Amino acid sequence: MPWFERWLGYAAPIGHGLLTTAALSAVAIAMGFAVAIALHLTRTRTRGPLPARGLVGVYVSFFRGTPLLVQLLMLFYLPAAFGLDLNPWLAAGLVLALNSAAFQSEILRSGFEAIPVAQLEAARVFGLSERQMFRHIQLPQVLRLTFPALVNEAVDIIKGSAVVSVLAIADLMRVGKQLVAVSYRPLEVYLAIALAYLVLTTLVSWGAARLVRARSTGAAA
Amino acid sequence: MNPDLIIEILPAFLRAAWLTLWLSVLAIALAAVLGFGLNAALQLAPRVTPLYRTIVWVVRGTPFLAQLFVLYFGLPQIGLAMDAITAAVVGLAIYGSAYFAEIFRACWQSIPRGQVEAGRVFGMSRLAILRHIEWPQAGRLAIPMLVNQAILVLKESSVVSIITVPELTMTAGTVVADTFSYLEPYLLLGLIYWLMALALASLGRATERLIALTPSPKA
Image 1 (cartoon, each protein chain N blue to C red):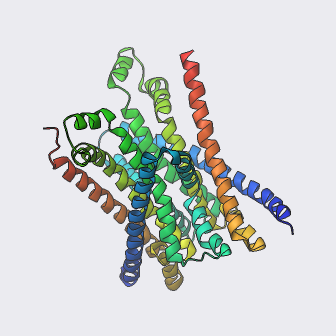
Image 2: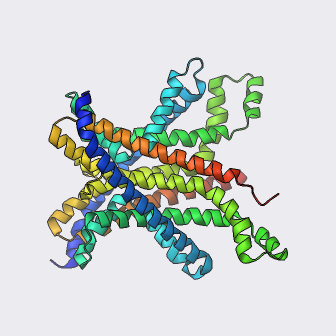
Image 3: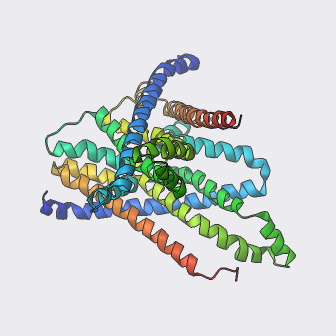
């Protein structure tokens, strides 16, 4: 088979794998953000005894201190020890989301800490409720401040998601293994896979940078 | 949970943790040297800027697993075969070097040129400027970032289990296959990585304190 026909044959499976990886990462990042907000609120809003805040600390420390692959294996196989078989897709999405939540909550924390206390005091004087303050004063500023860091985290999740291929999920990395099994040309296949990841991560960071620029010039006008 | 089983499997885990540790330390050291070299090349020869940017873009924009597969499965196709452990160390070193280079670059750029010029005006030698002006500030700035990056490399090293390096993560799999129990091996696996990362982090904090205690030349 001539080389261009072979390469053309790679395009469809790689495109499919790329979409799978992108979708899985997008779901994980969105879910992770929701969990991160919940973690942050638990850490800052709960009063009284420590347990809830302590648990959040342990959660964040564990998910930041252990490898993603290990977290994946633990979440997939530990329920099996109790006779509970988890769907690989569910396990993969859940682990990526839980992992990202830990990192995102740390990013959000630095964002919330960057808002001057005087703003919140002023808001309280004007009679805003905690919820209104969160929604209209804290969150918009925190999102703007932490957006670059959150985009970095999104890129990390896209890259990290490659390890879910060990659970036989047909993501981009898995597609590479399948193509190698057919073509016996690991070098070009894995280079193509790496290139596909590079396209995805570059698009995400480039799109995010454009968005920031568009918003900042819009605000100045 | 079965405590007897944990005692039974612990030696295998500790041996594997030792492999994970020296593999990672070797890769971190190589990555730091490579990263330092990359940044030095960038600072001394601005012509290499496009090359530097390309390396950093490609290494940081692709998953370590994909890089490892190119190294371990791809390169033998052009006659460059490595055993799994070599591929693991080389892969981790290349992966880490791009991040280390960016850390060194950030620290280097953080020192205002005016300080170096002022030092020269006062008749300090280049070495004295490096020793008393640049290094104390850049080092203080770099250490938290370097330690953070070292922890990331340690964690990433679990991925080399996929190319059958018998380190910690792969050992958990073999122990599971031998003992038919999932619970103890996987709990132990998570715990050992966690402890290693925490130990590395507190080592970093201790170093930071040590540096903060040494008198700075500002007095």
